[in-house]
Amino acid sequence: MAQYRKIARDGLWDNNIVFGQMLALCPLLAVTGTATNGLGMGLATTAVLVASGLAVSLLRGAITPEIRIPAFVLIIACIVTVVDMALNAWVHDLHKVLGLFIPLIVTNCAILGRAEAFASKQAPLASAFDGLMMGLGFTLALTVLGGLREVLGSGTLFANASVLLGARFGFLETVVIPDYQGFLLLILPPGGFIVLGFLLALKSLADSRRRAASAAETARAARSFTAVGVLPRPEEGETS
Image (cartoon, rainbow, N blue to C red; front, side, top):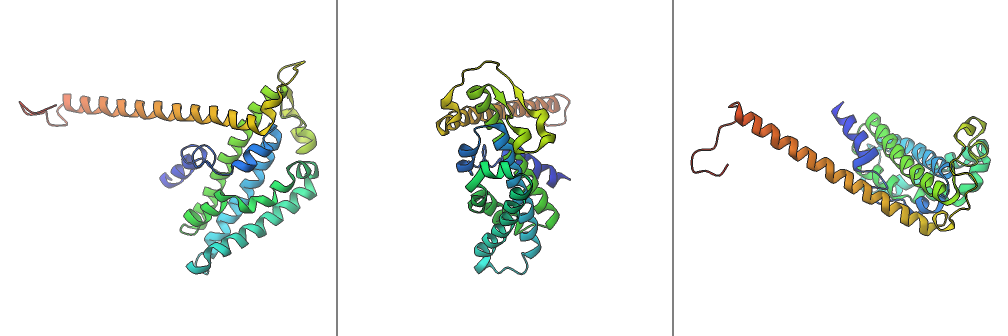
């Protein structure tokens, strides 16, 4: 269980594809004009990450080190083709919006990186779980970035969700700022860079405060142990 907790923490926060590894920035900036697009792209990538991690782990004994990279790319390309066809069949409007960026999932460095660094060395269940957590972390990053850009740029949230994702997602559609005139810069790719920079700064601040709190807690615990005699007190003349 400790291994799976670490995998979840890495995927969702510590080693997040966007906020930790700074990968997949091309689709991140291109499709996150709305939260709906970000959610759709994130879920498609998650499906590829889970399936590719599982497939690579199952086949790792049959793939020799010399051909592992071409083999991984071929596996990922086959899975992306299936996902692309599924989106075209079941959520065609979203497929049209995401367009070329769905086939380009094959070139996503994060997917090939997880296949090489994790799935090729771990058991199938752990590899599938790693793909799921990495995918959910990526989906979270795309949805948050797209939501902020959409709210600040258009005054809406999850616009056209019922059209792009299906009628069951209609409840997500929200007008946050009525009669908003819009802020075009935030909808365009430069706005994505701006919002991403603020989100990275907030994550860095949160991480630094967490580390400081952890260090302070460790210091308090050490002092309390010393006070009750669990740890030896410093000898006279030694630096405490």
